[in-house]
Image 1 (cartoon, one colour):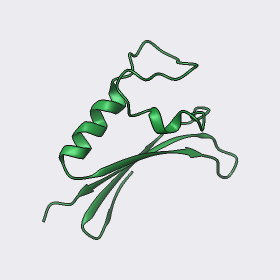
Image 2: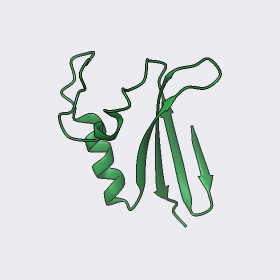
Image 3: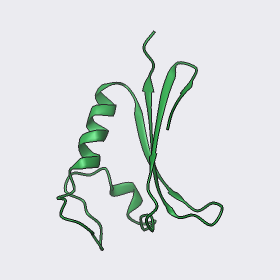
Image 4: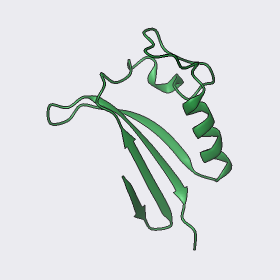
Length: 84
Protein backbone atom coordinates (compact mmCIF):
# COMPACT_ATOMS: atom_id res chain seq x y z
CA UNK A 1 0.00 0.00 0.00
CA UNK A 2 1.25 3.48 -0.80
CA UNK A 3 -0.13 6.62 0.80
CA UNK A 4 0.83 10.22 1.41
CA UNK A 5 0.97 12.03 4.74
CA UNK A 6 1.79 15.69 4.26
CA UNK A 7 5.33 15.89 2.92
CA UNK A 8 5.95 12.14 3.21
CA UNK A 9 5.17 9.18 1.00
CA UNK A 10 4.39 6.08 3.05
CA UNK A 11 4.93 2.61 1.62
CA UNK A 12 3.66 -0.37 3.63
CA UNK A 13 4.38 -3.97 2.75
CA UNK A 14 3.12 -6.88 4.81
CA UNK A 15 3.14 -10.64 4.78
CA UNK A 16 0.97 -13.27 6.43
CA UNK A 17 3.69 -15.27 8.16
CA UNK A 18 4.19 -15.72 11.87
CA UNK A 19 5.98 -12.40 12.34
CA UNK A 20 9.41 -11.89 13.89
CA UNK A 21 10.40 -12.74 17.45
CA UNK A 22 10.22 -9.57 19.59
CA UNK A 23 13.87 -9.90 20.59
CA UNK A 24 14.90 -10.03 16.91
CA UNK A 25 12.71 -7.38 15.31
CA UNK A 26 15.20 -4.55 15.91
CA UNK A 27 17.90 -6.55 14.12
CA UNK A 28 16.17 -7.45 10.85
CA UNK A 29 17.70 -4.48 9.03
CA UNK A 30 21.25 -5.62 9.89
CA UNK A 31 23.25 -7.13 7.01
CA UNK A 32 23.24 -10.95 7.03
CA UNK A 33 20.77 -11.22 9.93
CA UNK A 34 18.37 -14.13 9.40
CA UNK A 35 17.04 -14.82 12.88
CA UNK A 36 17.00 -18.02 14.88
CA UNK A 37 14.58 -19.84 12.56
CA UNK A 38 15.30 -18.67 9.00
CA UNK A 39 13.16 -19.91 6.13
CA UNK A 40 14.16 -19.88 2.49
CA UNK A 41 17.52 -19.53 0.81
CA UNK A 42 18.23 -15.83 1.40
CA UNK A 43 21.42 -14.56 3.02
CA UNK A 44 19.84 -11.73 4.99
CA UNK A 45 20.71 -8.79 2.76
CA UNK A 46 17.35 -7.69 1.34
CA UNK A 47 16.03 -5.55 4.19
CA UNK A 48 19.47 -4.12 4.96
CA UNK A 49 19.72 -2.92 1.34
CA UNK A 50 16.23 -1.41 1.52
CA UNK A 51 17.11 0.37 4.79
CA UNK A 52 20.28 1.79 3.29
CA UNK A 53 18.35 3.13 0.29
CA UNK A 54 15.64 4.65 2.49
CA UNK A 55 18.29 6.27 4.73
CA UNK A 56 20.06 7.78 1.72
CA UNK A 57 16.78 9.25 0.52
CA UNK A 58 16.26 10.91 3.91
CA UNK A 59 13.47 8.61 5.02
CA UNK A 60 12.84 6.16 7.81
CA UNK A 61 11.85 2.51 7.97
CA UNK A 62 10.44 0.28 10.69
CA UNK A 63 9.18 -3.26 11.14
CA UNK A 64 6.05 -4.05 13.14
CA UNK A 65 4.51 -7.42 13.94
CA UNK A 66 0.86 -7.65 12.88
CA UNK A 67 -1.42 -8.88 15.65
CA UNK A 68 -4.81 -7.48 14.72
CA UNK A 69 -8.19 -8.96 13.84
CA UNK A 70 -6.98 -12.55 14.05
CA UNK A 71 -4.12 -11.91 11.61
CA UNK A 72 -0.39 -12.38 12.05
CA UNK A 73 2.54 -11.31 9.96
CA UNK A 74 5.12 -8.59 9.54
CA UNK A 75 4.56 -5.06 8.26
CA UNK A 76 7.43 -2.96 6.91
CA UNK A 77 6.67 0.78 6.89
CA UNK A 78 8.92 3.10 4.89
CA UNK A 79 8.44 6.86 5.04
CA UNK A 80 10.11 8.86 2.28
CA UNK A 81 10.17 12.57 1.55
CA UNK A 82 7.55 13.19 -1.14
CA UNK A 83 8.66 14.90 -4.34
CA UNK A 84 7.29 18.40 -4.71
